Length: 396
Image (cartoon, rainbow, N blue to C red; front, top):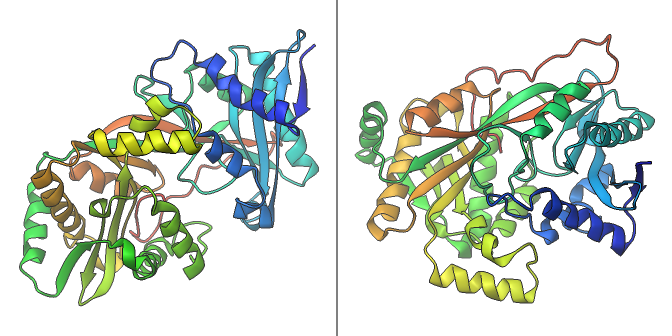
């Protein structure tokens, strides 16, 4: 008889970690997530969300004692009650192709969340920021995941939808070659700014992260202020984000635009790390770090991936988007640094930013979804609200 076990000891953690190797044994596109990244989510000393939340994870065992599934559930007290119904989350789902096994895992999450007053659950999501482990692939399964992206077989879609999950929002991932020209309207607007001395654009300097963290915070708070459930970013949070990026960032991939030295826009991208981790494996221990450094200095990376893109609402439609891209690409093209840019997911609740990315030459390469399961079948389901007042930016 199949049964769930709470993950507590080292053996159970190892079973949780090893299961994906079974699920994707014959999938050449799959790249494992770093074990350090996954375990950090469940470490109270590393994950700030434990300060105002709770999490639990389970493995599913079959009659023979073999692990055939895994999942986690979590409650973020700060945000769970900002929805019309208190909403928790589930994620880190992996399961063999057996719907009964999948439903046992979903039910385990649902029961745990109901015990804590939740009336719905979103998934698959992260007990943390949206830049990692967020969403389910629903279209375009034939590409490898970028760093931190969820990856799944196509049969997971049927599991979620058959259990009663509904799409809360779609997540669109785009790709753009560095050599692709800007559309004429963006080019003309950007060139106008190039000749206006009030506008400047520059990439970050690692030695002055505090300044760029504050510039990022200013634009982020301006760009997101009208979004549903928006909470302003604090200085400490912005600096923490920059410090986490520091070990892997390339200064030439993170750009800020200014008007009379006031920060008005940013584009943050990173080297596509999974191009290295495919060869390194899932363990970034001391040996893994040595291998990472070797790949970093001896192998050319094909792609970067965009983490965040934001424009102050007062400067949207003025050409700032193209202005930033033009500066960045001039350096990348001249030095032949990267071939393409993966633009990480943008929710369909942000149609204006999707339109901008398409106009900048982005081609959709993958579609994902964040699902919601409302526990009471009588309660109507509602999709994520669209960003209002034309204030749009990338989802992060």
